[in-house]
Image 1 (tube, one colour):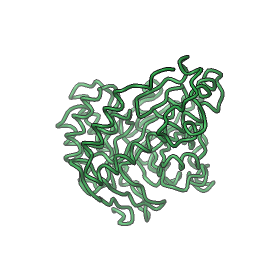
Image 2 (cartoon, one colour):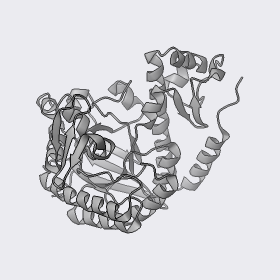
Image 3 (cartoon, one colour):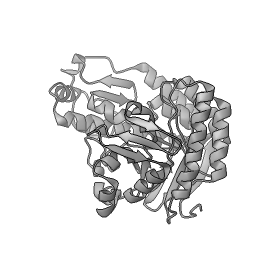
Image 4 (cartoon, helix red, strand yellow):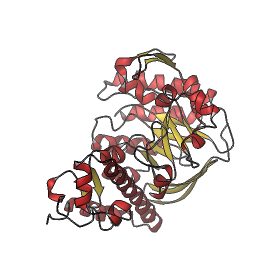
Length: 377
């Protein structure tokens, strides 16, 4: 069932880190890559062409939110998500499985699927592996995610095992429901919480089903970076070498660097966009709170090494003013800056892997982050 036109091209290694390309019906994605989150068919506070200008090659949409509003059938009638949101490049859609966990007070789960009450109007909806896969087909997702239950943390081993095995049964049903098309793919999702034996069992089960790629779910849910990295050390070693690996919902810059070093190829997270809307900027010297009064008379750029419009054309004083005045332009500029920083970080990682200098790159990254922001004027 695997479509040969959707493929992962492995170009090189530096230790466990991988340099590659994902070939799809909607274009090529260079890996390691970071996917901006466009939950409701938009990356908040940004136009699609501005998202592309940051260096992003692929974005993420969400099955749960789009099925509620504007509706998957409507998006399908209007030509699919690429046309609807004016993003011609690849789109990956989250299956809605994370909402099974995060909206636990609004759902009833059984072995067949999940019954939701909409967080918008209380209306009842049913989501099964088959329906999730159908919705993603209607959306014209380049990469469809298998429907799963994101196991909450902490979970006792027996609870994590039961949750993971339910997700594996749903993965098989998702795969059976997937409509193979030239250049399109579907990823299975590894679960198992922080337990190495469960992670290995889950990875083996998914590999036996056979997917175009494999995601690592159920992390970045409160277990901390050390436990997350330990789970990655186990999981990436047992996933197929010739398929992309996607760590869901991660994360901070240090999470990305450490995960790339452990063999992860793809990432998504709301952090850079959400933080931009609240005044937090990610820079080469760590995070900067642009609402802080220390910036109000500072005519210097936010990050003098950054190529984004916020840093090339505006001062810290102006960005501070925008955020304190709650002007929409401030959200737009800081969101653009954060996504540019994330894309530049991924480009730097790709370059370091290609050159075999990842250790030096990591050391320089950590040293610069540890310096903290430039001294106040």
